Image 1: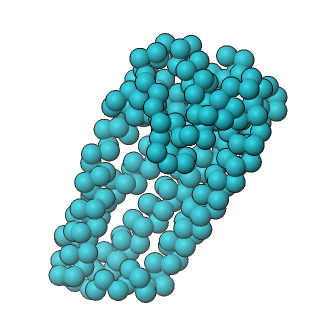
Image 2: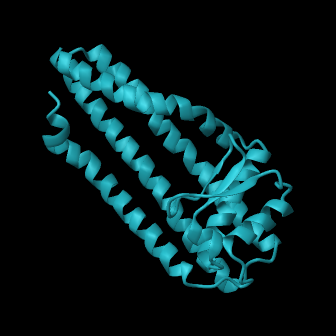
Length: 233
């Protein structure tokens, strides 16, 4: 009973567009980042200095800046009040670094102002971490045992990942909006720089749209299987 997930043509019908979108989004992020990593920013400031300047200007001096282990692994950790920057972003005075750093400082600013969607997303993390794998287990066990109630319980648990992906969109878009405002307010961008920063932020935004599309498509496929099982019952 596990085979429909892999061989049912309907799975491809639901999932293939989202998978292609995700692949395109990843390609666009990497190609855009690579392009603007070669363009020096107007102030000739590496990402680390930009981060320190923006944090200071926005009353976020308590936020620590640390290194991130992987490329494009830049993120803000609200639980530890830490901004982590990858080596290329921290050390290079590039336009790409401006966009990445300002976006993550935008998240730190959201945290400071208790931005509601960020609070909701942070609260969903434990539930999603548990529900995503537990939901899959319950779903497949229900399919295996032909127990439709268990299948639906699994779907309910798994649906948390869709809610999380949906809440993530306004959080990320707001962080990008704040990023542009901060860069302009601090005089860190010129006309050419702002176009590059917007391209970097736009490319990153597409990855979150793709993540939502993937979560929704998988959920719809699970619902289709569950509905078909209910009809047979």
